[in-house]
Length: 449
Image 1 (tube, rainbow, N blue to C red):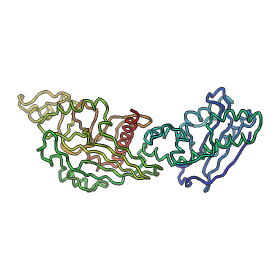
Image 2 (image 1 turned 135 degrees about the vertical axis):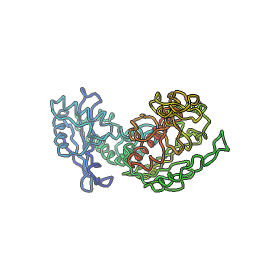
Image 3 (image 1 turned 60 degrees about the horizontal axis):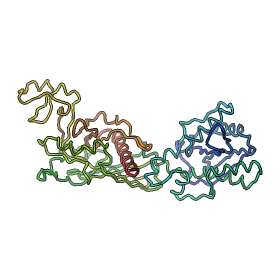
Image 4 (image 1 turned 180 degrees about the horizontal axis):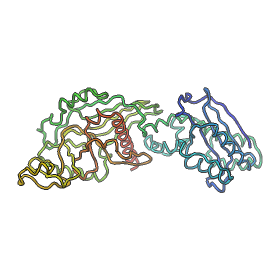
């Protein structure tokens, strides 16, 4: 077994927290099949005081695999830092663990305590318009140059030839490829800020409301102040720790957040509200509008063509703009059998009270008539979504807040802006993170289509 050590200036400032400290791992093999190929090179990199150190274990005689595996085991035992790989969860780690098993060694690499940058960046490949997502593609995206011109598969024949000839030029090529893979991973470390976007590890700094209420297309003479906040609501929002600016006739909510680490490249996404809806909801939105009773001022639907969600990230600054629904929505009681519906008032009341209403003016409530109306400002709460590695998950953080809808069968819900924005900051932060994911999913899905 041949061992090589290298010291380089770090491409980045030395991590100042254990959370950002990694052991970079990359291996070279004679093929992808774990049981019939040879492990011929293991490389590891880690940050030192002001520098970056790489160690390589090379199978120079074709039979040194057990020594290499033992050396890696002992090395990792002395470094508790999580592993940093590129496609390591699918290839490097399973391959190494299988070869520990084949060599009857009890050690196994942990698969959960690692960061696979390939998997973490997969959702952002489309967002940054990369046709492929290889390590060299991401290096080129950040303007990182390589001396090594070869792909891993091309080096297999070089290694077999080296075993026969011991040609030092071939050895240098084999070591160079692995070394630059590890240095490249270190240079790609700033891209881990993308992971922060998906884990709500950002700080909400400010939220503002701005814009003018659009007139109702079907009732242009409607009072433009019908959806304005009450004075108490306005005062609550003005004195919240986040919200600023004029809120009499808001149309858009703009949230400004700070990432823990800056994104190395700017990202801008704009998507129509209709692109963020489940397809069934988008297709039936017009039908549902016609079912809405006309006893109240019609709400401004936020699935209009002129409504867009936008997301802009520059450095560590995130700016997100969200259309706000202004008008009347319905809260549907879940136990409709215990309610009466009052057609004249267009609302449901509990039977304990409704029993005193003249039977001519009441009827048994049904699921789609068991509601009360609410006037105000609302933000959308989309159904759970998962696409290309981005997942929003259950919206349990809004369980304590009433959810409003246009109709009981509609999957899209809304939450009142005022209690969401002035309540628990963690709840609002998680809501914004899910909304950010939904904007990203909509953009990826649109580009894929």
